[in-house]
Each structure stands twice: as C-alpha cells, then as structure tokens.
Length: 109
Image (cartoon, rainbow, N blue to C red; front, side, top):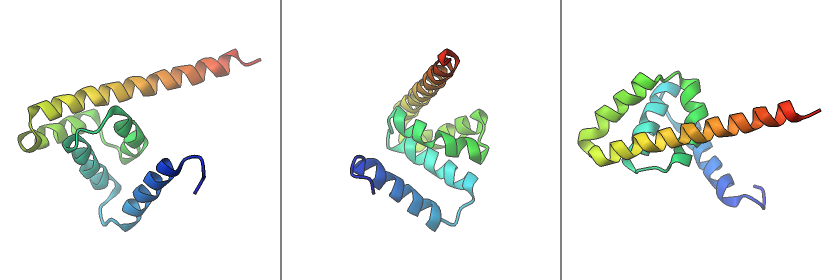
C-alpha cells in the first residue's frame, strides 16, 4: 500500500477482493454493481471509476437504461433521475479528461 493514497488503495483492494470472490460473469457483476450504484445514489466519480469495467463487460447504453428502469420501483424515481445526471456528469468528466490529454499530446514538440 502506498503511503500517499491509503483511501484509494483500500478501495482498490476491496474491489479486487469482490471481483476475485464473486461467482458472476463480468457482465452480471457489472449489472449488479450498476444497480447498487443507483440504489446508494453514488456520485459521478463512482460511475467514472466503474466506467472501464462497464465498457469491458460490453454493456450498452440501452442495457444501462434497462437497469435504471428495473430498479426504479425499488429505489424510486428521484434516485433513478439522479443516477442519470451522475452518469452524464461522469461522461462529461471522462470526455474533458480525454480532450485535455489529447490536447497535451498535440502540443508537445
């Protein structure tokens, strides 16, 4: 564990243990994780942290909407609407980071 990032290191360790010990396929795992993020009203950064695994699992935007619809009766409309906003903010952050990285690379001699 790095001395500079104990919280991030702990979160990474917890996630790795969860991945290693589950019996679900990567796709099922991310469906469950997405539903949990919506249920706990996770902030945009939580969605962004899970974006690479969501993409690798092959989930589509249509399927993510399906999860939102499936959990709506359990977690409520405001929570699902908030999740939509958080997902869009996370996407915006990811695009901004990608654009900044691309600009940095093109400005290098």
